[in-house]
Amino acid sequence: MSLSSNFPLKRGTDFPPSGAPAAKRLKHEGNSSQKSCHVIFCIDQSGSMRQTDVAVGKSVGTTGQQITRWKAVFNCAQEFVEEQEKADRNLGLFNNSPGSLYYSLILWQEEATVVFQRQESGVATRLRNAASANQPRGGTTFAAGIRKAREVLSGGTKPQHFNEKVLLLFLSDGRPGDLQVTPPAMHASAPKMQTHHRSHGKEYPSVGTELADLQNYVGEDKLQLHFVGIYPEGFPWLRYLAWKFDGTFHESTLQMDEIAAQQPAAPQPSALFTASAATQSTGMRSTFFNISTALTCFRSDAPNPGLGRERAVQLEGRNSASSARAQSSSTSNSEAGEGEQKFSDVRRMVLKNADSEEFKPVPLTQEVAKTVILRDNPFAQGGIRNVYKMRVVQPNGGAIHMVAKESRHEGEYAERLRFHAETSKCQGRAIVLSTDFKKALRTAAMFGGASAQLLQELQIHSNFQFVPMHVYRLKDSKVKGGFRYLAAEPELEGDYRKYNGNNGWVCQEVKDRGDAAGFAARLAQAFSHWTSVHTNGTEMVVDIQGTHEGFTDPQLHSLDGKYGRADRKAQGMKEFFDSHRCGEMCRLLKIAR
Image 1 (cartoon, rainbow, N blue to C red):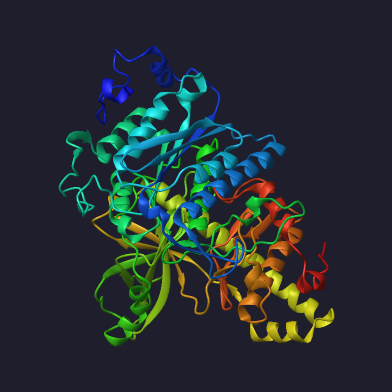
Image 2: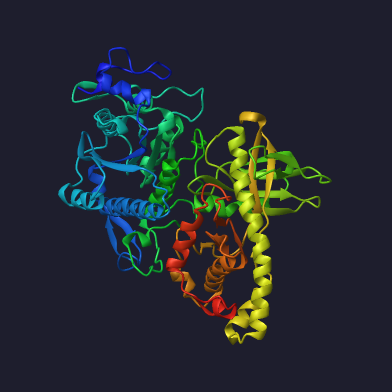
C-alpha cells in the first residue's frame, strides 16, 4: 500500500502526519545538503501510440519517412538524457557540478508499470531497451501514471532523496478515459473536476486527486510538472491540468524536427538536440529540448524562478493567426475584430536599473498614450513565453503590425518585469554590437576582396539590423496588479527561421542555401563569432532568429553571466566554437580560426 493510501493529504495541511514513518519526516527536516534532482518520464503506453504517423527529418532518416509515436517519443527521451549528460560533463570542467540526477520510467495505460527507477547511469540504453521490450496496448487512464509516480517517490530511502527536486514529464497522445470528455473551463469559478473514477466496478481517485497528492508530498517549490500532448485529442485535458496544477503544457506536432546541426570535432548524439523557432506548436525534439532547458535551470543553485500558474490561453490555428492582418484591413485597423481586444492608454516603458534588484518600469516621457489591438490568444509558444499578434493604432487610422511576447506564466509582479528586463537587455546590447559589425563587414568587403555574390548580398540587405523592442504596459483589470507587460517589436516579413542556438546548434540546412535565408544564416554565424572577438572573449551574441529583413530575440553569453537565466557563460561560448565553421565573412573580417 502506498503512503498516500495511509495518509490522505490536502493542500495546506501539515505533512507528514504524526503517524508517518520517520524516514519520510527526514525529507521535511532538510538534514541533507546534497543536491539531487529526479526526472520521471511518465509515458502513455495506450494502443494509439502504435500509430506510424510521425514525420522524420533528414537528421534521422530519409525525408518523408514516418515512424511510430512510440519510437519517436523514446528517441526524444534518449536525446534528452544525452543532452543532460553532456551538460553535466561540461559543467564539471568548470567546477560547477549541478548535483546528482536520477531517472525513472513509468509506462501507463489502464494500469501503470515502473520499468526502472532512480537510475543515474546508462539511462539512454535503458530507455532504448524499454522501447523494444514494451509495446503499446490498452486504454488511457491518466490517474494510473500519476499514482505510480507518487509511489516511486515515496520509495526513496537515502538522505539525498528527501530534499530532491522532481521534474515529472507526463506525455500522452489521447483523451483520458478516466475523465469526462471535456475539461472544466479554466477560471476560478468553473465547476471543479471530478475527484474519482470507476474502473471494473471499483472506484479510484481521479488524476486531479493524484496530482494534488503528489504536489503536497513533494512540495510545490520542488516540483515541476510538464504535460506534453502529441495529438490534438489530448490537448484540452493536458492544457487544463497544466493550468490547474501550476505546470506547463507543451503542444507538440507529430514531427521530429529538422535539425541538421554541424557536428563538433568529437561528434556526440546530443549535438542534434536543439530547439527550433517558435511556431503554432513545436516538433517533438523542440518540445523535449524546451523541457531539458527548464530542467537545467531547475537544477541550478539559482532561486526558484516562481513562474506561477500557466496562463489560460489556447494556441490559434495557423489560419486564424495569418488572417489577423487581413481582418484588420477588411474591417478597421483601429477597432477590435473577432478574437481581439482593444486597449487604450497604453504606455511604452523603459526598464530602469535592469542590472539590479531594484529595477522598475518608467513610462517614456514626452510620448502620448497609445491604443493597441491585441489578439486574445497567442499564435506561437516558446519554452517560457506566448507570442501574440498586435497592432498599434496610428492617428491617421492606420496601424503598425507588431509581434508581442509575454511570459507563459502568471508570475509575481517583479518576476513578470524581470522576464522583460533580461530580454530587453540582450536586445539592446545586440543592436549596439550589430551596428559596429555592419560597419566592420562593409569596410572589409570593400577592401578585402569579397566575392561578387557577397557584395551583391550586402548591397541588397544593406538595411539589415536587429529590430528594436519596447515593453508595452496595458491596463487590464482581469490580471493581478491591473497591468500586463508585453515586449513588442515590428513584425518581420519573410521566412522566419532560427539560425543558431545557445548550445552550439546551427541551422545547417538553411545556411547552405543560396537564397536570402541562406545569407541571413551565414551572417548570423559570422556575427556570433565576431562579437566574441570584438569583446575580447567576454561576450557573444547567439540564439539568433528572424528573416532576411532582420534578426530578433537574441541571447548573450558573458563571462560573468550578466544576461539572465539563459546566459551560459564560458560553456556556451565553447559550444558555439565546437560547431562553428568559418566562412567567407569570417575570413574577410580576419577572424577565421
